[in-house]
Image (tube, rainbow, N blue to C red; front, side):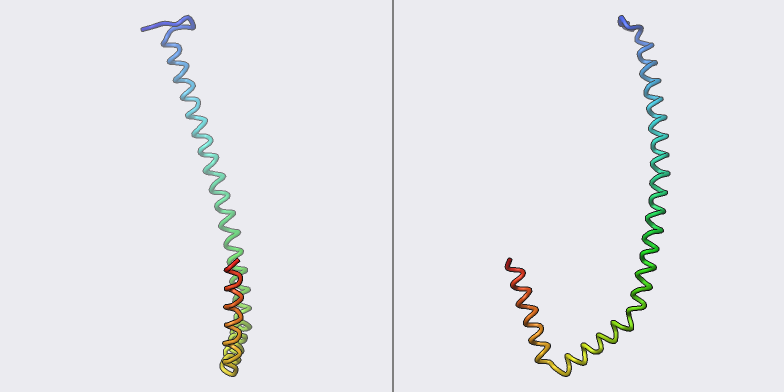
Amino acid sequence: MSYSIFGGRRSWDDELERRISHLSKELSALTREAQKRGSHLYGDTRDTASDAYGELSDRIHDWMPVVRKQARQAEQTARDHPALVLAGVAVVGLAAALLLRR
């Protein structure tokens, strides 16, 4: 067994073990705290997302009759004026081509 001028090897090993034990306890405490905070934040996020989904679902449900009515009107207009639809598609296609070239 070797000794240094600062004390015996045994005391240095004991001090090192004590520090490692202390750091392990601190790490465990920090891990528990992070888990508590993480689960709290997860719960808050889940509640917020659920509220947003409920509100969006209600709005979509309210808008569906209007959307269906407009879709039927657009379908009827397309049947009544097929040349107008083709011209509209051509204009949209040209605009898209111009935007994609930039």
